[in-house]
Length: 248
Image 1 (tube, rainbow, N blue to C red):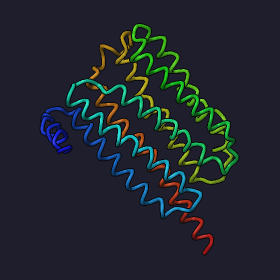
Image 2: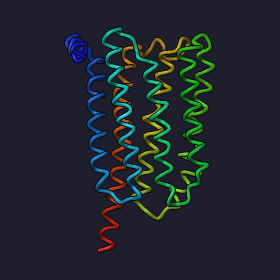
Image 3: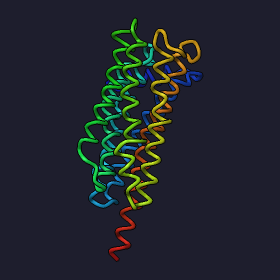
Image 4: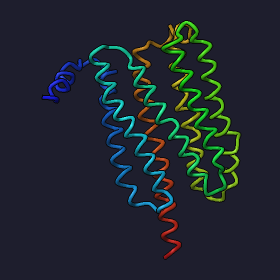
């Protein structure tokens, strides 16, 4: 009986509802990525198992939230803002944890981890307040949120995280860190862009519709979260093979 509402929702998906389509594909792709990361975790060395676990958790948390977001979209036609922020407030700090884990062997201090988590929560909480509670002052809250994003960019591109990566003599780690840094700079840029399109006085409020921003968010979330995990997976598999060959 519990499956009936979901069947009705699936049946109500219009053939030209391309946004609704991405909610479904986002849910399935991130669920599939989670299964892949959890199974592949057995193929990597012990020091990489935690990183692979977190990569799987990121996509699994997102898959659960997309399961609910697709229902919100199909029943109301409204952007599921609350569910998005619940998802981001869990998954974005976990992505920051990934940066710390790959750099820990090269001297990263726990302070780097807490700074990046603090910046991410600052960015997300301020963004949520600007989009929901304080819509009349959304520009101010958007500026406050951007400070958190700028803090993450600084740590990744100019701060201690970048210095540790540059000091490493492991080309695989340098390449992985560089790929993750570009995800943060380019991939995460969709979130402040989306904020400017949705909020009351945003610069892009008449340029990008809310409907199209849901499309961008859905595709961007899948690319960012799955891509982030695949970079970690590539690094973990490559490092594990290299160590196995050295031991042989």
